[in-house]
Amino acid sequence: MKTLQILSQSTLGLLLCLAAGGLCGVFAAPAGAFAYFVGELYLSVVNMAAVPLLVVATFFGLRQVLTLPRPAVRVGTIVGLAVALVVLCAIGGTLAGVLMMPGQHLSEAAHAQLGGLVLKNASDAGEVHVTLFGHVSHAASSVGAYGVQDLFPDNFYRVLAEGRSLGILTGTILFGMAFATLSRDQSNMLNSVFEGVYRALEIIIAHANLLIPVLAFGMAAHLTSHTERATLSAMGGFLLCLLLTTLLLGGFALAMIAARSSQPLGQVLRGLKAPLLVGLTSGSATAPIPHTIEAMSAALGFSRGIVELVVPFGSVFLRAGSALYFALATVFVANLYERPLDAGDLVLIAAAAALASFISAGQNGVATVGYTGVVLSFLHLPVEAAGVLFVTIDLICEGPRNVLSLLSVCTVIALVSAGLPSERIQTADGHGGVQPAQVLRFEFTRAQLMLAAGCVAVAASLIVLMGIGVGAR
Image (cartoon, helix red, strand yellow):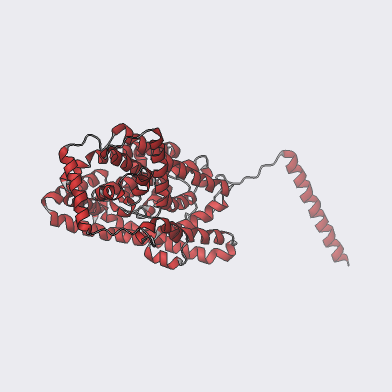
């Protein structure tokens, strides 16, 4: 137990776990499979706690932000920054694809490997039926129907049980806005219940974090044992472009957070180590929520209320990593099929990638790959064949996507909290109102003291005279 605690808090130890897991996946696959199973158990526990924590954190965050000065401006700023960061990442992905040109000048072996994957998928799929008239299939209409059904669920308990974060967040925001209108006397009891739930979930996650080294080891072993080397070589240009662009944009985000928190970059990295690792290895956008809240508020000192509102909101809607991924994937497919791209096409790719990232809100893992077709369809590029190629390497791509989205969420928190030092002073329970930064002091001039003393003397004389009069009667 002590060894796991030391490893979970050591960056070098976690890197060694990743390296050892990669070797284990090649030379001792059964041991790696067992470690991956234990890591999946850890993620199940964290996701179990993350979903109710998303509800409680959004409730507390919304309640506190609504009590801050100019809450409408604050919420509008959060939404505006989220949209701007997604668009910037989509533009960055498009420009990186143009500069690095992934998918261009592939070798004959790489073309043969990618073509074999597409043909294998086509043969496994069997006969394809095409309907010219009649009702549109569910697969074709799922993208359009998904947004309405999940954004406004007709049963909050069903989406809560199914873990659909988009519907959960919508219901929680509506409930939190209504609850914030109640007086403190009316809401004290429920507020205490939520506080107890919040603390209990934090304890569960704190103990589960001891398995982070096992998670890193197991995920590295799983990747090396389930990904073909030929496929990695053929898609190597795309993967390298994705990783380098993620590192570049993530570095800018970390520098912004360090500047706003007035802390060294190393301290910021140590504070965000746990959420970054969970986001890199879990494949879930909600799993890092508890770690991110703790890191941004307790470790880096940003406003707890803003953190608790932005982190759940950003984990669902601020999908900057997905926008980058969609743009790079589209440029890769265009180069693969030798489709020239002009300035208008590049603008269209960036806009469509940002749009696809918002449409895919609430989706994780392989489900995100399907929304690449939204961008590809604008350029009339083959959607099905491209989907097959990206599904094979999605285990590697989902980590950088989640990390960039998480750092974008933290950047929004840093920018919105800037210039608000009074909000960073925490109460004893971590959820109370804003405490004053200075002790209240009374100061009087000499003339004011003499006037006050005279008033006291006159009042005392009147009291004595009244006592004498009552006694004389």
